[in-house]
Amino acid sequence: MNGINILRANVVGTAIFSISAIVAAVVFDGVAKTQGVVVALALFTVGIATFLWGYWTAVQRSREQEISVAELYFLMGQAIPKKVKVVMHSCLAAQCVVAVATALVRPNTLQEGAENSSRGSTLAFGVLVPVLGLGLNGLWAATYGTFGARRLKGETSPSESHPDDRQIG
Image 1 (cartoon, rainbow, N blue to C red):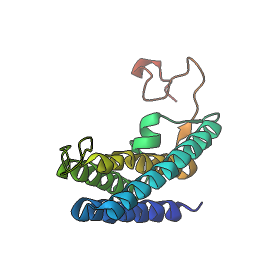
Image 2: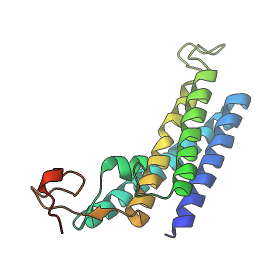
Image 3: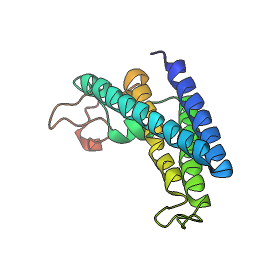
């Protein structure tokens, strides 16, 4: 998958989720709630698949390159270009905000005429959607990130060595 396509998939998935969750929260009837759950679970499933795909790719690269979990899923450090970080972090933040906001907008109170029904429980499925953002972060970083060479056990990087240990040429 092309790097720009991963970014597009994240933006499109975030937009679909946002629209779906907001419609489900505002309309809040049978069809709206159902589509909200279906969209949230579909994006969660895609998120799991991309998370595993990214992890598998990272494991293959980790034989020769030093990859940390923070760089992989949270895009920290110098491995990822700033433009990519902005798009991916924005999408992940939007997914989190929409998920929590729509889940909280309909509190768990009983519906009229139903004894054992929770009003907002279907909207809580949205909190699973940020797995999509994390999965796509991992897939992008594992595929296109620029990581340093793997160090052998006991080997230190130049920044970790003591100044007196460096040879003067």
